[in-house]
Length: 282
Image 1 (cartoon, helix red, strand yellow):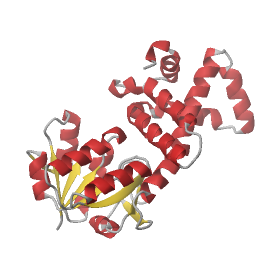
Image 2: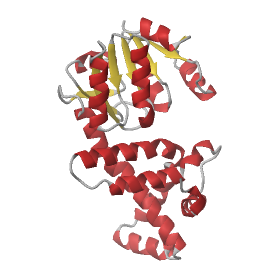
Image 3: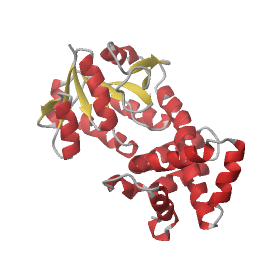
Image 4: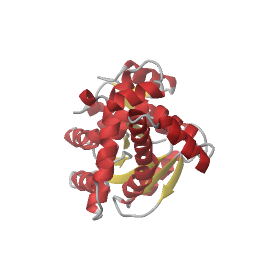
């Protein structure tokens, strides 16, 4: 049994933690300053509450970081500051260059760093969520998930490779969702949404329905996707390609960020109106 700490068990993180626990490991988390929803998730899946980050760093042999992209570096720094010396998996949606920077910072402080990229939703069913790993210690992390349902694939020894794959995959899957939302809002503003649906459905009878569904189902996570689009833009720029498309996608998700707090799913009409409101600009 390996002692594993997780920072922090959100919807994705708790599924990763549960998969490790399902493989026979004890998983710890820190409840201090966490929301009631996070507490409920952790309790439901029998994660062991530790009173402080300092104690988690002293207790854990491995730490998983599964947090919003903009927090990845700060979370890593906080672990270093508490004297952690074990294995550290960064499974966040960050650019490969940020992963390399965090890895260098970790290794210089005696921490074994592993780069990770999660593709798929929360890992509750086999063959639906895949954690890609890269780094010389990737097998240590892979061994934490011997009994699934999270699928694991090691793709090399180079830090940044797993993050690069995640960025390229999400550039299409989440980038095109933002594009579709912007197209629908523009068509609505110009009074041609019905005609656009008709044309789309001439090309593909299900396309209009798919576009509407993609635009509405993303709202609760838009606050998180904004940061991911910035990371993808940085990845493109580092590769020598234009980054403006995904910076624009970040703006689309920024305008939908407040839907995180909506008690009920929003209608397409509300979403499009929100996108078109000038006061939603930063």
